[in-house]
Length: 422
Ligand code: GDP
Ligand code: IMO
Ligand code: MG
Image 1 (cartoon, rainbow, N blue to C red):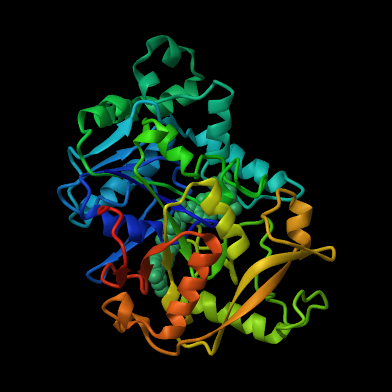
Image 2: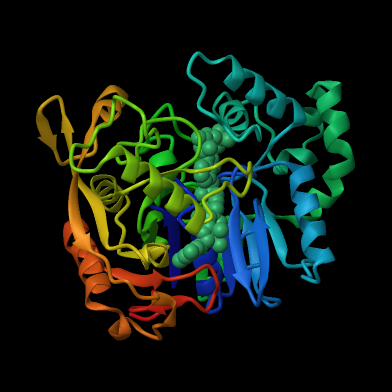
């Protein structure tokens, strides 16, 4: 069985937590896209781990993890992450592999990324990890892959500073390298989890371009970056938060208005003051600060227009809802069910950035449940109001919600339907 986990919003949905949880029943975990721009958090037994490049199955001592072909790998970031894990007692020797087709991030790409974004009239707000530059070198056919480290002519033709950077890392990288297609073919009966990074709305093609990352964070990226055909993938799971967040710039139609004094408040139903305090409440309760850059995340209502679009464009079989506990104490919950753009009501997710910037959220209200969900042992113990919110989302997106996460700890996870069974 091969199960794909993607982010169904703008990243940071809790993919790391869910991959770690489901990895219990997997043998191999393949991260298929992105690089050290990602920050995947796992909390287990009171210990918190922030992973950037290493797949989120690494905490189990017996799992094999692979950095896939769709990834872009900064060797220094990789080796410091391995050291961090080893220092914390996680043995990584012999069970971390890298696809020989993965591309390498060079220090000068990181500098160009930072300079280019700072010089943009409208910066994207990149993580400054050289991601976009590495993917554009790849598209330009000037990138350097793990396999190229053994290609003498290519290495000889590199600029001397690039070669001097790579040479000390080359043997260690080559020792970890694997032909991922034949590796997966060889393990065809294994339970394999394909771990995405970022999210559908940050995907280069499906996302809010140009305010996106540069990798394939969509489900199709699992096939391309995981070195398997699309029909080899059995289940596609999309992780989303009970609300929305975004780091960096770009349109965010359901964003809470943070400015209590602004004249440009979008919503007549919700006072500016209460939206600003809701924003602060969600950021503090959900600990909404970036794992990679520490930036405060922008927060907003759950955007069901965008989530339904993510389900359709990624053939999501089942959704995973996280952070529902953040809403435990609210009297009322709202979600965006359409956009009002220039007097028209739009129910499909537009490509146009000016439309998305102009969009006002049409909000639907739900009663709060006013109870601590993390005390529930199964879905049947959930308060009716929480079930109503969940089941409305399922109907709206025409996609079941198979897992509900009600806290950051491994234990705080309610399985309605396991992707490993049926
Ligand atoms: P990822 O990039 O999708 O793996 O997500 P991040 O790790 O960047 O951000 C998710 C944050 O939410 C992390 O701090 C997690 O520990 C935390 N988290 C995950 N699931 C839940 C949940 O259900 N409730 C709460 N309160 N926090 C969660
Ligand atoms: P995970 O895997 C949230 C955002 C950046 C910026 C844009 C482009 O943890 O969900 P980049 O450095 O990739 O060129 O930046 O994408 N971004 C993320 N936002 N979660 C992520 O990863 C992200 N990776 C990139 O903030 O807006
Ligand atoms: Mg993250």
